[in-house]
Image 1 (cartoon, helix red, strand yellow):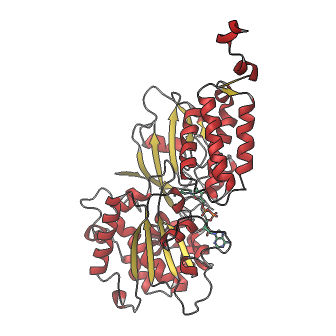
Image 2 (image 1 turned 180 degrees about the vertical axis):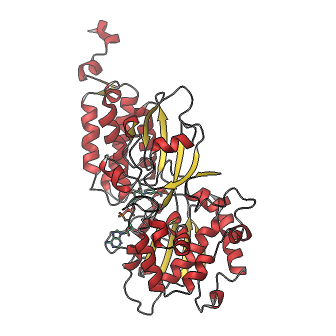
Length: 430
Ligand code: NAI
């Protein structure tokens, strides 16, 4: 189920057996592919560039521009790899999309492959979600049986195979280069960038790595045109997107809306915060984006406005917490996740997340010292910009922002060193 102000990706979610090819075709599915195959591949790339589509995996990098970074064809293979390893805490949009309407993604993969000259595309899905794997496998088989995959697709002369690959449940494998290592059969750890995958990616060949929602948005752009897509959203954050509301919300779930909508508007659609409570803090884009508070309810959820207000749009995973939640507890829980998922390749992230958890647990238990807040911030400072990939940077965001907005809650968990050395309850001993 999805509630929508921009019924594009979610248009068929409520239909009977929405995941089938029949349901998708009934709603106009695969018209985009027919249109794309009648165009020059370079014109499809231009159309996606002109639409302004920005990567929906979190970073918001312009999709068409990324495709345009591929070097000129040299006769060797080039690949499309779709990142379906969604694992960011609170992020839960790609899995519902793949369950409800997998053909959006399959059609998007075929169009994208045609546009970039790829004949073998890979779909990397996290291994824990066997039901999603099965649904994608079925969708790929249905597409192949209908002539949308395989040799000479729809008589165009274009050939494409899609390989579906299940990962093994590591958050780091959502980082695009770790994903590529994992796909190659290696331990999933990030590679040094540059070279970016566009230049040297899978098997060291030019590779486009895109998120599920980005690729699923492509058929709509080809069908509707760049201007149609640009007609939604804001000038620099165009189009529609899935906003995932979770936490203390009356009706949590997926809300498809133009970028630039506010949390206040989304909450109106979601029945508001649970009765009798108020928003205390929330994440605009998953736990690796700095938290916001009730003051930010009217910030337009587009890349520029969220950035200007001190956070990042990220994955549009809006985790909403009311006044009953301890911010210290929430941040500690997130950091335990990052510590567990740190791949260990670089010291700032491996050691830093470990020590952040130690200090946070001390504060949460009311046994911190006043120096601990500065120590937390210093640790964050030593991770931010010094870690090998975005995991380390992301781990610092909830801490620095939570201290900024709720410092008193951290202070409540601390004592002066003297208090710790000579706790009042032991004063009779001295
Ligand atoms: P990034 O900004 O380094 O790169 C974004 C994309 O643009 C990549 O595909 C990269 O290869 C490409 N790119 C950037 N500069 C390029 C250049 N000069 N030439 C060619 N290609 C270039 O961000 P990254 O590390 O890929 O992603 C970080 C984001 O991922 C975070 O902001 C977070 O929101 C999000 N994230 C999402 C998760 C999820 O479950 N969906 C999990 C964790 C993080």
